[in-house]
Image (cartoon, rainbow, N blue to C red; front, side):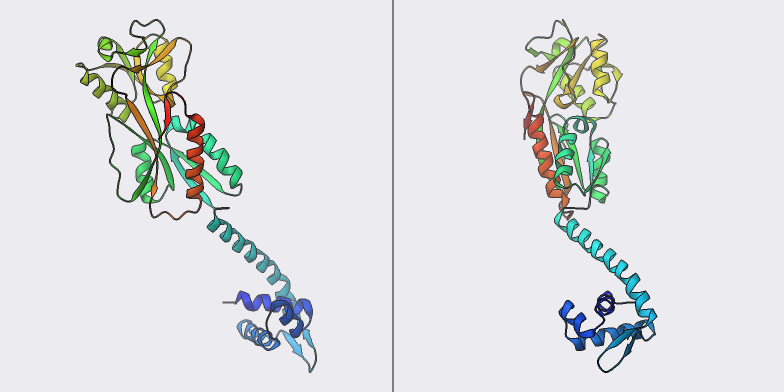
Length: 305
């Protein structure tokens, strides 16, 4: 295999026309340059210079190799710069997993900051629920993920993960305008006869609603399901049910009101998780960008953790 150090020396000898001049340009001795050229000649199997007492003349092979070699060395220099940039976090790739409501409210701010600070970095997004993205983080397919956990549906975290709390969301009961239960805060037991709109069966959001109602002595009659909170609120606005919606998924829309549950605060928590052993240099910048994004979206129902 050709030695790129010897190739660089050959290119410089052809450029300067002298072992001594090439040595001065490269910071070597003339003897070291001569030895490197000889080693290169042995590697390619051809004499590259006609040597006289006080001069050298490059052979056609030397001219060809120097021309093509200069292109290869320029590419290698660029590659080395890219590697250095990756190590410093200036280049490289970050794979971020996120759930839909964070995708809409938090991630755009974070990505905007990260791309402004690291314009050459590639950011890949993968949207799914926490149960789907956590295995990808553990497997190394994702560098970082946003996930959530409800007070009433707590999570445990694998030892391999670092978990950074980002946001605490209030859970809001969404009711049609004029609903008799729509006071400053809602007594859940007043909704025992209502139809409910919930997320897909088996999701943490659905489980949370069921456990909340069970704590108040009834099982909710869930008649519509959607994992899209825009759809959920649309169904509430149409008067076909009530819903429990986390603050990131809630939008103040005409025809609906969102109220806190009376009593002990009911919350969902948002975390950033990554493998503790992940050495991606972009990871630290991404976490900083996510924290800044959470500062931007914080309001009366969204508190920084």
